Each structure stands twice: as structure tokens, then as C-alpha cells.
Length: 72
Image 1 (spheres, rainbow, N blue to C red):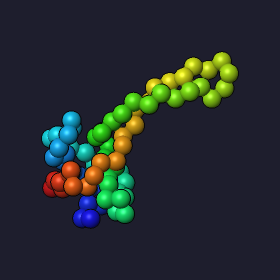
Image 2: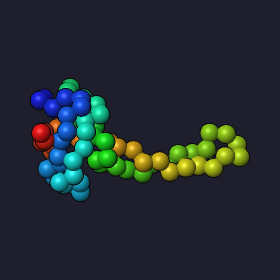
Image 3: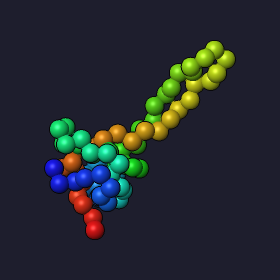
């Protein structure tokens, strides 16, 4: 896998096609990369203690390394 942490990449496929981002973490064994601002999903989080409200947080999930290309 030629993409490393800190590289700037562009998405080639999917809903985020054409978007650019920076690689936060690389998973070479799984052939996946985590890119900030790409492949964002919303996750519901239950309250930790009684009396608190649950929240919705946005996470960035890893994408397959073949779906991104390095940008200079």
C-alpha cells in the first residue's frame, strides 16, 4: 500500500467522489485508510449516567485504499 499517514488524497468513487482530505490513519493489513471529512456517518450514543441525554456524533469510517488516489 503506497498511501501513508499525512498524505493528501482524493476520493475516486462513492458519495464523496471528488472530495479531498488528509489521511489520519492507515491500516495496511486491511488495505484501508481513514481520511478526515470523508465517509462520515452519524452514530447515536446512549447516555452514560442517569439524567443525561443521549447524543448524536459524526464519525469518519475507513475506506478501501483502492478508492483513493494521492494528490500532490
